[in-house]
Length: 215
Length: 222
Image (cartoon, rainbow over all chains, first blue to last red):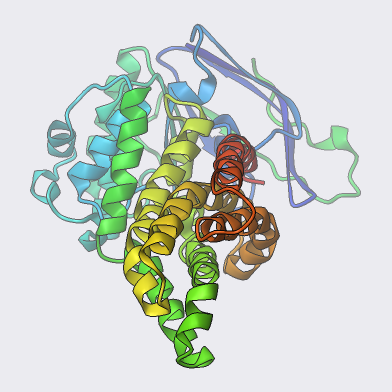
């Protein structure tokens, strides 16, 4: 698939966060979204995931056939989408059935994330880093071409960051897309960087803060 | 599609049964109201058995509100809702599965337990059966109407009271026809079937409108 974003603008609570953002991501490519806190990195990912309406501009995906864009992507963000009362395996099993297009089994996915021993533990008992790794294991239980990762290394130790970098590299060699909002190098060294410049003040005219325009 | 639907249903039933789930909570609340009413009214068995169906229905409406605010809010808070937006099924089916699970854990147990609780308000066997039947037919309407309110208040912290204010007026027709059907079974000028079919129709309408409205309310996080 190919993701094309044109002239995207974001407004939250009446305040313009960014505008004029255009980029395209093709198969096997990675995109690092950077910018200071509050620049709109998470808002951009939320919009791509179809949970927030763009204020202006368009998000298009090519080569996905009948499916909609939200059906072709994985989101791993600050809110991990895991239920504390269910075990790690149950959470992954649910995600696998809900999202469709199953790939690895929950046990295999947890093994890949180095967490085979927590499969039968309720997620509520896990540490922040372990929870994050269970959430990342979701990337493996269903095959979806676009990964949206919002600061995926938060709470991860160095070894797990390495595992994540390997996963992203492998995903991209298979023709997948990775868009990650981050403050750190993620092992996406060859990926392009999209820096979101914040809107300075409401009095500045619109043209003054066009984002990177590099289709 | 069926796989995703049943996965959602199974997950919500499992969550209701685990620690912190709201499974038995509304049933206990239901019991509390029904137990308190005879104390307030005094031991007048004729009075109690006359207003018994109304008490049971009123308790059922209030008990439905317990835990309703968490229907979508808990999923909104932990990001599960983002997961469901990208599910292989439309959001309407997600709502349908969740409301169905919520009805199976609150509405249906209420209907099943109502003959037992009917003993506390001196209901006759006919009245018990009639009340249980009307509750079984009417609580789906309450669940679906409640789901719209729950979807609208999903992003509001402590939105429980707002939810009740939004939802209770819409539950009034169900309450009216539920009670009148239960009372029609005990005799009177109206045949039992008339209010009962209206009640069933209300549930069917609520199932369609409620599912679409709740999904529309959930679709955008802002």
